[in-house]
Image 1 (spheres, rainbow, N blue to C red):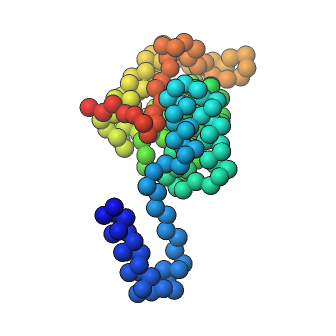
Image 2: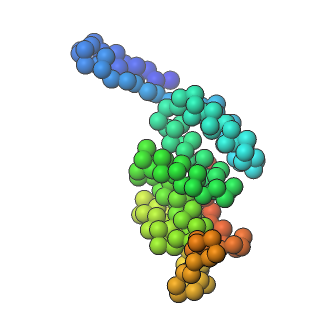
Image 3: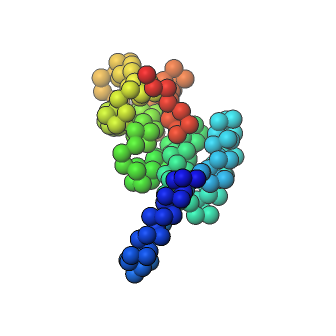
Length: 187
């Protein structure tokens, strides 16, 4: 309540001092996530990925604030990652990064996609960026160790598969952990 009163007082003060200047600004105050984000996260936590995607997509169509928008794109990135729809996941990760370019979660998730697509160089670059932004993350450290393990097990030169794609890990032992705003086991 105090925060809200303080913000209202600041806005009122600006509008009183310079109404023409204040009228040119848009004020957005989000006190909680939109219902679509909340429902989407509930479904995502329960493993109902498709229902989560439906909620997030509804939120995107309904107009979301900046925080909800970046959270929605990140969570859609994770949802499509779980469905192995890597291009859709990558698009949503890139949108989240455009909205908030200094958040470790987005780089971790994009690195996971690159890793699953067999692009170790880009995966390691994004993991390094994520670790720089959040040096004590167990999630990132685990994923970097996994990328190193994969790199040691692949042939020195990645050979094209019949589909033209690079070799990529196919086993659950090589499944990097995504990150959402709901979790991070830090030290």
